Length: 99
Image 1: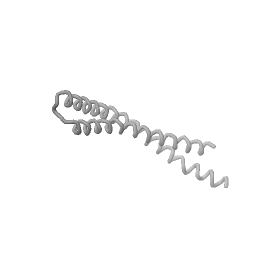
Image 2: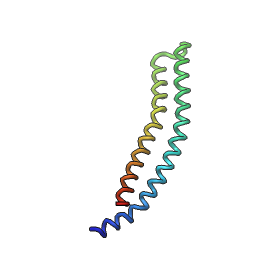
Image 3: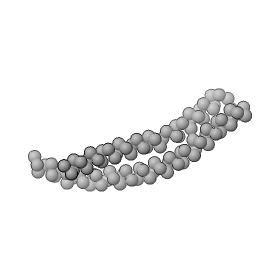
Image 4: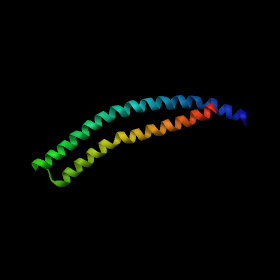
């Protein structure tokens, strides 16, 4: 049983390294998309409010635009959640390898 545990630990070391690389790549992509999507959602919100204030668009059109702005705003937060799950799995894997 001890021999199987040692073999499993040795086989999981490359998995832990790959999870670290995936984590770094996802953090970079999530940071970049957070900036881009934040700017886009801000533009959509301002456009919706301006359209409502000047009477250019009706209520349902503005609600669609605000819903799109909200979705664009939430996507980086979903990415943060995914990165947190990868970090948690990596820490559990590292604990198993070190134990």
